Image (cartoon, rainbow, N blue to C red):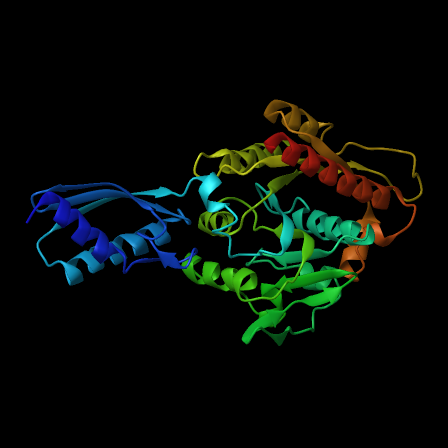
Length: 361
């Protein structure tokens, strides 16, 4: 058996392995590189769309099984699994997720409790009020809050048929299309899922839902960094990410770690900027006063350190919490300082996206 023929046989065997996100076999997608045969040892590099640990293990097992089934037993298979380079995984011909969405923005935070979901919800409504078509996915699987913030806690998504296929139909509120894991669980039910199960549930909101044509998709990510983040980031062709933090030192430290995740070579998602939430406290009876109870300009300094824009500073005002609790995001108010701050945030996000895309051309 010649070496060339052996390589052809191995490629033929590996053609039965499907890249789960791109829905084609790994040979047709040219994801197998540096294939080497040395006696009974087969080694190659495999590029995949999702670099999370469980995905790597699944692809390793699939390749080993394909070789054993189609060539025979007794081979030692050494596979170096790498993340698909960003310019490939985001290529339009490979994009099967959210194809009708122009800009996809992830809202992230290094830790919980900094107001990430509040920022994501108000940003979505602000963009909708500017006559953009907007969707919002609540990917905070262990603490979904979007149903409450949009006053749709008791709603359940319906199904719709498009081109002979059945999809989940997002719920619409305040001009924003919504999906949340909270729609599929009781309000008092704790969601206790391991990483792969959580990732599969979230993927359905992207791949098994009909969003139609949108200008913006806002994704409210879970706090922190982990397997779910990597899975979503690799699945979805993100335009960029927004990091939310308070001015507090411990929150800024976690925010920097969150930013570092997006900067990883295997992730390589542009950071659109930093949002400083709870920048200062303004009591209702003293609307002109500012009390910097969590520190001053911490996120501004972090933005300067990372060389990214400071997209907005949101005050700590009781009405923001109250508006979220009753399902009417505070940005819907006309002239309050907090509503103005969120509208300014939306404008800054748009301007940053425009500049980022111009820089690519």
